[in-house]
View: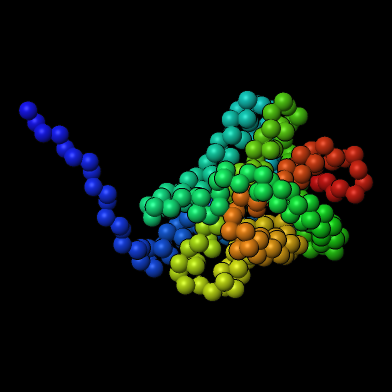
Length: 266
């Protein structure tokens, strides 16, 4: 009779990852997500400023139709785009798990739902009102393109997809650009001020396709979000705030475009 094996011994603690591994890992995550988006936005911005005419006479369209006239195929493409955009977040979770951490380390979990919702709602209310005013002013001064938050067909899935797109943006940006970036830069020995600047500039960079106003406005938002993350130790409220801001922009535009005079349209 074969003897039963005893309980498995606890695995020995892993050695800390080297600075090179941490750096390369961070660069890979950014290269697959918002770092690449920053380069793409810069190229787009160069194209806009070198095109005849002012920036405000050009449009930057978000959430556009992927298959005009074919709603079911369009829906499939929309859901595919939302799902694949979250792969870098799964990669971040994998890297953290390797070190016996998790997204909970960044404060992205369900342990404090009501404080996260409350704080996020307050942040969204403050930033949303000032953000709209700043965008209108920047566009009026010729520093910004006309942002078209959505150009989807009027089908039954339009608003649900806009909400999902908003949540996807929030999860990706706040987990990667705030929680994970700061967590890694702290491990790499960056000062808090340098890490804040890196996060804010990165956030502004991938909004540069909107124009100088989009870059500056989102960089300021990045400074505020890093400050709040340092204070609260959680990205949860930031994900809530960002989700509410984008839902308001996407769904609000869908409901109000062409019906109010103050909202620019392409």
